[in-house]
Length: 444
Ligand SMILES: [Zn+2]
Image 1 (cartoon, protein in one colour):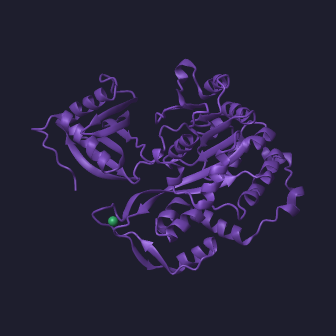
Image 2 (spheres, rainbow, N blue to C red; image 1 turned 30 degrees about the vertical axis):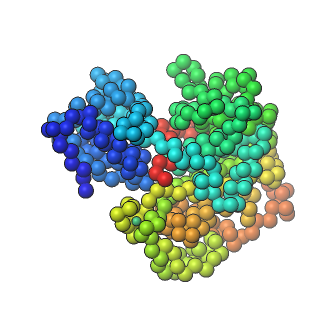
Image 3 (cartoon, protein in one colour; image 1 turned 120 degrees about the vertical axis):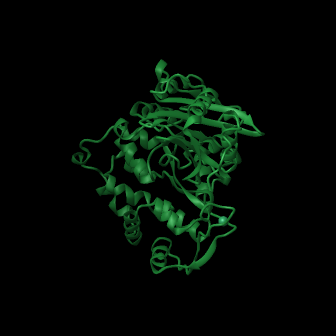
């Protein structure tokens, strides 16, 4: 049901305030203002899905856009170029921290508001949904005084939440923590945060160089976007600093492959890399209305192949007044890789990529698919939701992979790579695109 505003009697200032507060209360992560030919459509994103919210008649659109631009510090006279802004205020006792972006489209301006929600980041890594095994691995890797820990995933998979939660865990009086971010998504008391500014030459790389003259213990680099940043971060990690960063890769394997494609010295990378946390976000089943049903033959086989479990019943989404189509909030699915000596050796020997898979996916690693299906079996999400996030052919190859037990010890002589196989490797600049989006979980 679309919300209806009384545009003829309600000032536009109040209408916008109402939209902001209402969207925040609905746990929306974004508000979209789309210009159409004769009106403006407003949609909100809840649990990852865009839903229609209201429509603004054409005669009020101009005022509405101007008001949003004013409160977000944008230039109201510029409508032909993209602009960024932000809103930080408290309306009706609701604290708002919103990033605003406008772009010109053929129908007029489109404005998107990203609502930042720090509730989750502030509640600690133990609340991020790690399985007990993964949680212990994460705690171990971040308690090392040096090395690089990478949090990876596509845009919108909750990387920032995980990174901020780790920083909070490490935020103690006796340690000097410095971050370089673009943008700074959350202010953390006791941590020195630097906003990059490429226009004046303050890039991740230049900021990183300066930081190491500031005697840091922990350094967080918002994102490793180029080989230069990667090189400095690796140097830092092997000279007594714990470095945290993120990469846009889907899983532990693709992260290591990406790192190997970079123009960095492999033996340094091998020595620096401590751990990888790869993650996805799945919609969480609503506890009020979820209901059990029999598993299908396909699901039975899948759960047997991947988890080695015989499961006869599973939860499905129903839908009620408390949720959206049976789902409420989101849930992280993780794959945590503690880099062991075998993987380090393979990295420094520049091992063929195909061989890495056997080294990474041993019984010690719960894959994203396994973690997701396990959470579906527990009734936290559904199999459908997990299969939407993970490609079907990945599943098939993984099922095959499970039947083939890797035997690394007897194979080490074959791990040395021949030079032929590394022709025309893409540089990091080719493959990493700048994320304009952050990844905070928005609706817990
Ligand atoms: Zn429900």
